[in-house]
Length: 470
Image (cartoon, rainbow, N blue to C red):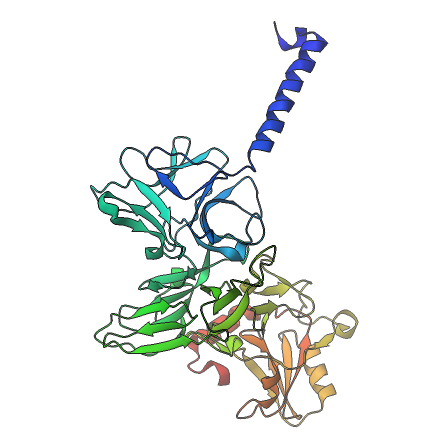
C-alpha cells in the first residue's frame, strides 16, 4: 500500500515509533561505559572510555564543543565537569604530528581486531590506526596513572604509547624529541601555527608556520645550543620543571614552576598563542567537584611574548592588529574601525571595516577621523614620511590628508612619522621608554585604509635590509 493510502492511525503509529526510536537513541548516547582496560574483541563505542587505576585520567570519546555529534579519541583529566573542558584534554588522535584530527561519530568503534592493531573505524572507513611495529600484535590497551595510553603485546611489551606521539601537551615523566604543535584555537583540535621542537642539531626552538618555511627562518625563540652533536631531549617532570638535556648530559631549565611539590596535577602545553605554559591544579583540597581551574605556574619565554618575532620579522599577531600580553595568553586586538580577518583565529590579523580613502578626495575631515591608541606601536611598519619639529595638530593634519597614511607616530613630542602599513604591532607600558629615538612615543591611529600602498609596502620590505629603519 503506498504511503498516501495508509490510514491516519497507521501514520500515527509509524510517527510514534520513529519518535520513540529517536528518543531512545538520544537517551542511550550520554550513557558512557567506563572500564580500566580494553582487550582484543572489545568494541567500545561513543561515548565509552577507559580510566587509569587511580581514576585521574580517562581515554575514549569526547564530544567537540562546536559540534556534539562529532567526537575526539582523546585522553583527559577526569575530575571536574562532564564532559571534560577542552583545557583538560592532554592527548588526541591525529593522522600525523602536522596532520588532521579524525572526527568520530555516534557509529564509530575503537577496537583491537584480529590483526592486533588499535583501530578507530566508522562503518567501513578507517579513521585512525596506532602506528605499531610490523608483525607485532597487541592484545590489551591500558591507561597508566601518568596519563599514558599503552597498547601491550605478548609479555606486556609496549607496542605503542601515546607518550611517544604527543600532540600539544606534555605530562609529568614525558619526553619530547620531535615537535609539539599547538592547536589552532583553545576550544578546537585542529593543528595550529606554533610549535616547540628539539631540533636535530641540538637547538630547542619555538617556531611559527612550519607549513610554509624551514625551522631556522620560522623560529621566534631558541636556546642557541645547536652544534654537531644534536641529541637534545625536552622533559617535563613531576615538579613542573620543563627542561632540556644536551648530548653531554647537562640539564637546563626552560620553565621553573611557581607552584612546587608533588601534590599537583600538571601539564605543559604549546598554547595556540605561541607561548608554552606549565599548568598546575591541586590534587587535594580543590581538585574535586566542579573546580576545573588550572593555574599558570610558568611560561616559555618567561616574559615579552608580544616582542617575539622571526628572522623574517614576523610577529605573534597578523598585519593590521596589535598584541597585548597577559599571563594567561597573548591577545591580538584590532584598532578602532578594523575587524578580524578570521574572528575565530584572531592572530590572523585585522582589515579595515570601512571603504578606503581615495587619493584626491575632498572634505576628508568630514569622512575620516583619527583615534588615539596610547602605549602602542607598529615597529616594523614603513616610515615612508617624516616631519621633524611639528606640533601634534600638524601631525594629525598631515596623516589625515595623505591617502597613503595608515597611522602616525609622535616621537619625542616633536617629530611626526607617517606609517604606510601596520605590521608587528604591540601595546605595553614599555613602549613609552623605547631605546634610541623612542624615548617617548605617542601613537595616533588613523581609521582609514592604506589603499594601494599595500603592494608597494610589500615590495619595499622585500628590498629593505633593515626594516625598522628603512
